[in-house]
Length: 163
Image 1 (cartoon, rainbow, N blue to C red):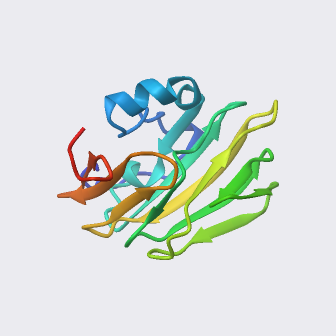
Image 2 (image 1 turned 90 degrees about the horizontal axis):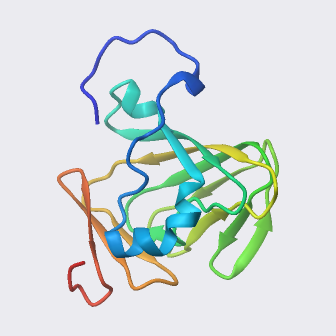
């Protein structure tokens, strides 16, 4: 996160794309490389020095994914679709979304979710999440779990062995 600065309003698209493609361990990044290459995040909240919640303007190219299918123990998440028609995966269910639609994912619900762009058009959406410390993310289909520690994600296998 950046330190607070008194920034003037700006077009969201003028905020630089986040340089780090993801926080996933290297083994996972290699596995997801082609799908993560198509994801761009502009960390709007970080740009303005926000600490309590994050806001990202995210673009998914065709065939890209938002993340591995996951759920959070303490973090609420919210998405709002600006353009495109992504597929929302909720556990084993799939729901086609369109511009203007939104969805929220309550912490500790255990409902894993992610967005898939299975179309030939880009998808652009806002994602908002709080930054509750000691959050844990559980990944539905992958041998992966994550915990926040001092503001950073620490990853391990589901049996707690480190990556």
